[in-house]
Length: 317
Ligand SMILES: Nc1ncnc2c1ncn2[C@@H]1O[C@H](COP(=O)(O)OP(=O)(O)OP(=O)(O)O)[C@@H](O)[C@H]1O
Ligand SMILES: [Mg+2]
Image (cartoon, rainbow, N blue to C red):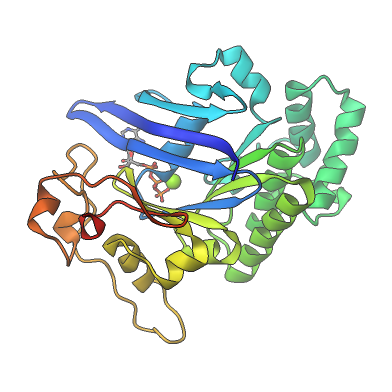
């Protein structure tokens, strides 16, 4: 399968007085053309930092330590800022975490979307207004919403506006960081379905960050499981939900409530600090299956089946 984005050994650190905070610490994966790839993991494991690293939007004291991000024939990490700006929004767009609160409260929706279009293209204001209306319709909102202020819309509708904004120029790749959190399940499902529909209609590829595994089950093709700044497992959603291999993935899935499993299990222990990751496998202090090697050697992601990768000594040779 053809990859539209390839991330190689990406490291994004934050400088602190106590030393480097290694939030993303050697992450590699591919995103295939026209898929929805999920990224899951506990709060603080580095999901947002990973997305910001890919887009080169990491703010000081954060910095990109090393790695490559290959997209459309270039390494985004080495592209001139001017050339990167030409790609952002048009080719590669972003829905930031907390997007429902990212709109400007004093501008009508139309002004905000038109501003974005005019800044990123040579289109006239008139044409941008037309595009705004069709972008709103594409996410199931009437054109009248264009004349409203953010406070007149519910949280779910503001998220829809953010989805419309990030997809109105029909980018080939959208990186969506928790685009449907803080909503009731009905609205969450509706907005997820909207993302899936836009993806089908415009042939987009989507990377979907969510800590809620139910979101991934709903629309993703494949999923990456992140823990302590690294990827622990990558697989096709069905395969990963039915036969998770990494003990951390198993723990995450056991923490999801269902009709059969009303009493959920949590993963024992606390997530480690990015200032000082455990030696060996970063999950070993919490792992019920740890062996001697786990505290000594860091496992690498290895292919254990078709499209199935796991970083765990239980599956080594
Ligand atoms: N400006 C900063 N300075 C120092 N450390 C930071 C900074 N921003 C983020 N971090 C650290 O980087 C780590 C990863 O944070 P990140 O926001 O990427 O996690 P996340 O997986 O997106 O979490 P969530 O699910 O809560 O959104 C955290 O340990 C956080 O403390
Ligand atoms: Mg985040």
